[in-house]
Length: 408
Image 1: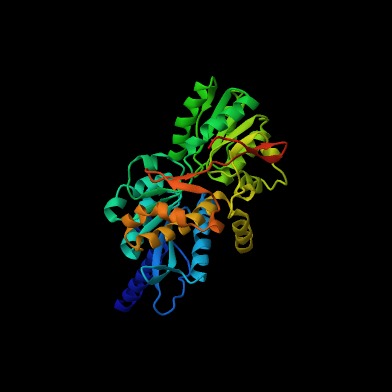
Image 2 (image 1 turned 120 degrees about the horizontal axis):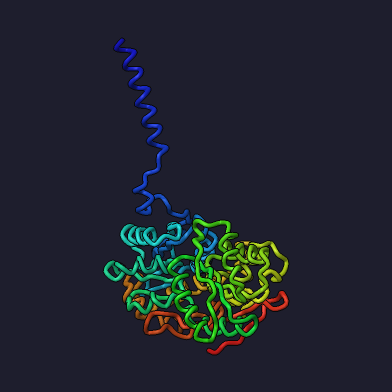
């Protein structure tokens, strides 16, 4: 009898352990544990050292494509730098070791990842490609002494006065005037808003919609879409089109934004589109598997990188296509050039770990950037920490990409 009870007890105990191994630990997920992207640590020769650079972005979920494209620019730059023997700071040769964590596009995950990157890997710089992640990191980055590589066009992240934040792309409010003027003149004055429901989307709306009204326009529908939950936009788009808009204001990651355009056209919308700068026209065309831009006729957005004409763009596009078998977007291009700028800033500062000194020499990094690496033209870093890059705007006319001239 005792033997029988022992057998039963051991059987139950084994089942408990099996079940325990199958259950996810929610605290691990919340703290960023177990979401590290596998990247190969570069080999070093005798006397060489590694400097760790961190990245926290959406590498899974609806925005994974965007996160992967952002990281690919860093990856390509790091591999080039390491292949060419690294870089020298104060007589010491360094190579770059990228460490990336998935934050699923969630600000709290980005903050947890940044703490891990700094505390466990001593990263002087942590990149994140979304404003929510940037703002979450800004709560403690000055105390923890790490520089944020902020890939977001949200002006607030630098206007907040954080001394260790560098905003990489142009601020989005520079697009409000040309986007409004173009679509209002070509299509009419009635606007329906259906942007992403993220903070970034809300900020865009709070800037664009008042300006649209100031120019004599009317906002006939104002809503948003949670792309992390919504995959079918039929009801939302139908409700917006009931108000007979001339223009739809949309945006977010390229993939769901393209699907939204497709559904709007299927429902009979023939007007224009104002597309937030996160979504890219060339990427959207690929999502719809279209041979032309006919579906996006009348859309205005940022100029696709493959159509841009900067000193380092042609070679970068060629190298990227060879490595990734795909066209690069602006997120890849800006991340690529920014890593070269940060490396030049480290050289000028004479340090790879003093984030304050590196930040103080960002302008030197811009000045020393080789011409062949100028995938974009960035003349200076503003006092607020934002790169001042030249705006490049495009619209779709007769199914083709057409550059739209804007002021400097």
